[in-house]
Image (tube, rainbow, N blue to C red):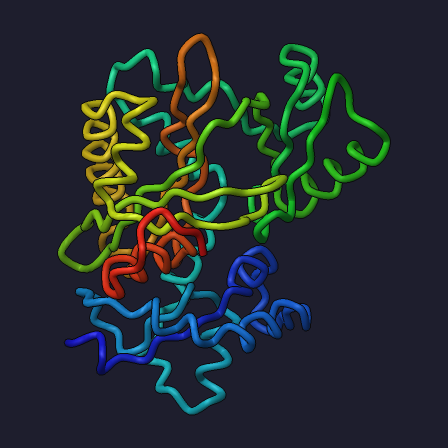
Length: 303
């Protein structure tokens, strides 16, 4: 089916809906307003794809499904409860840790997965902070820039309260050693009933964990930038690892686009975090990739 015959939905409030999990959740006005004000971005979501569904949203969640049913869409054409629960479970940051632990490329410039832990108690969090000094606390599910706290040396009263609430609501806190970021990038994929396709690269910037902007450039140019820090053969090995792991894990359970965020950090030599986050949805990186690939935008400019 051609992408032009499908309905593309821009629902950037998706992460908030996923974190909440309730089909009756009403996103903040600011999130809904942002979606309405930027509906023109839909044209940069559209691309040829192998997905069988007529509707292709930014991301699938219980709230969107209920909205579409209320619009009169046949529930049989929408993701099942099992599919939506799979998406929510695999949108948790623990999934990114699991995938990272399964990558085997044998390069010393690829950081080991033990730079972060899944903590289920305050004592575990405090022990990791004591061993590492400066850390980042992350809730398993959160919206962009939300659910992230930066801590140095010890938990403040506010930090401890946040950790207790997160543990109570989501069962864990991800605790990461804070790294000095050089570049942020992502590998973009599409998952469909036949397998996993690599779409290309994204190069972006964030501030305090919140997305800021993307670079518009060809895949070749972005790979050349990344290869200035990390060997090209390492990137190829990681891409192949990810394709295999995601194929084994997602195919048959998820149909849609996804992005695997990665970080190049400063150490004795640059090191790569091969799986920082995994977003089972469209991303701003995909919009940038589409805008460049299909509109032939001027390279090395930002959106």
